[in-house]
Length: 398
Image (cartoon, rainbow, N blue to C red; front, side, top):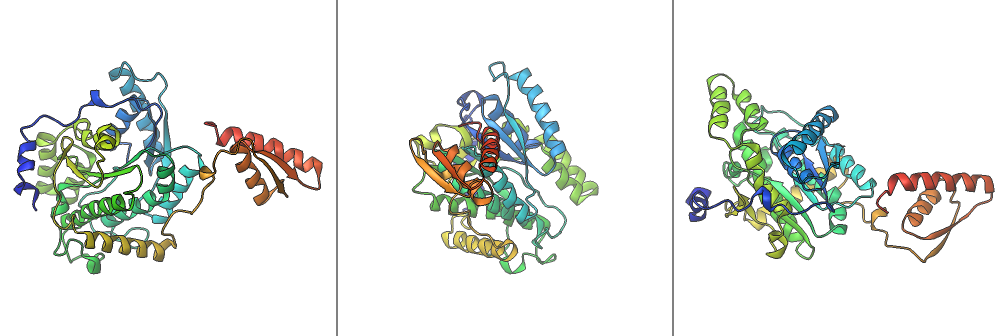
């Protein structure tokens, strides 16, 4: 069903907003990741999360831009949020969604920090860009908007499960209805002349919806709430870049129309903030749903609701990952999954180096009393000193 054919869509235009900044709860115990957080919707989302106490990681390609954004956020929060924490918890996480290997490594880098993860906002994206291939040889809009987030999210899935209740917000667009016949042209994904740039964008946004619904189904038994948001027509760098893509008069009109008719990023971010923070999501068991401005549910296209197509995309994405980086699912076990070992006593042979040393640190970090069984007392003492230093650095929350 087309969005414009739904009564709910038109009712949304005349009913009050479904969420406001004043409704965002205290997030001081939460850790969040926002992709593309240095500008636009991602920036506005990060400001709100940090102002309400969350520890937010800005997942971006450019460290320089991310650090500049962090300074702007600190200033903006100080000026506009009088009740915000005096010290904001903001960090940079390097993420290149155009390269699946780098997306995977970014997830691993976060997991190594030993922190929980309660909120993941897959916000970053590109729109109607000229035809190019990603580092993995995949059309860039499909690569960045879908495949990069697919790999990144699966790499963080165990952490999100450990930290539940947790949220995953996938950003899509109303343009998911502008797609080729069948929804996604799997056999012509890298054919420059098969479909237009905007249709390529549309199928990447449809992929976001298909992925979000398929993932929500897989997590039905967990308190990990996966939902999809359309932010609306927003004044953002995305609209500006789209205008530049089309050039001349058409491009200029695209930029002007966004400035005249588009929402401010702060308003557009409210729908994804609702799905990321509202207590209603858990209270009403909201999962696998599609929300539009401001925080109102409607039905996506028939393609997006097609479970067969959802599973086809999932299998296709897994096979692409297997082909490019030989990686489908997260590691079966991580140090963060080790239970509390307080009261336990362990012996690790050869614990002064290599795997023995890593095992010893992990056991000690969870409260076990560990005996280092080695030949050399001097080396054993050095490993204990190194372990204590590492423990303080890697496990500050323990």
